[in-house]
Structure formats: structure tokens, C-alpha cells
Image (cartoon, rainbow, N blue to C red; front, side, top):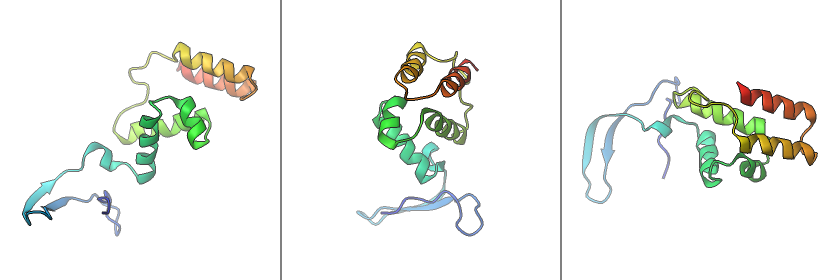
Length: 126
């Protein structure tokens, strides 16, 4: 089974679904149907969301699973948040103590440099 495209492969315009069909009873429904929230994401973004959920939203687990750095994962997450029509950190009050401790532990263990740690800590203050 193929996934429903969300952009026209010819012009890039929005795809409007106008017909649904049931293979079991051979019924069809016609009309204009809108995409669900996550159907507007690219396959890569959906895969990222699936990994994020599987890792229970823990970025350090995602780092191990997909082999990307904390800042890269956070940037991809922000792209997805924007693609869904929200602004990242809109309700956030800064970095959690757990995130700050993880950064400092990574610095202490030599996983990241001082400059990277400072950048991550400053980004968390915004």
C-alpha cells in the first residue's frame, strides 16, 4: 500500500483527496477531504517523529539510535514543529535541569567540547 502524497508531483501544489473507496464492500465516498496533521510531513520527518516517540522523547536516546548530535536532532525537531504550524519553545521556560546536567556530563566525559557545551547551554536560555 502506498502513502497518500501531500504535494502534486507535477507542480508541487496541494493535493486534494476527492474519493475514498472501501475494498471490502466496494463502496465509494466522494467529496473534498483534508489531510491529517502529520500527513503534511515528509517521509523523513515522519520517520524522525516515529523514532522520537519510540525513544520516549529522550534526545540522548535518539543520539545513540540515529547517530546524530544533540544540536542536529534539536534542529530537526524544530523544523518539524514549524512544519506542523507551531513555533518551537513558544511555551518553554528555558532548558530543564535534566538537559543542563546531561550537557555538563557529556562535557565532563569528553563527548563534546567546551565550545559546543557553551553553545548548547546558551541556546537553552533563549
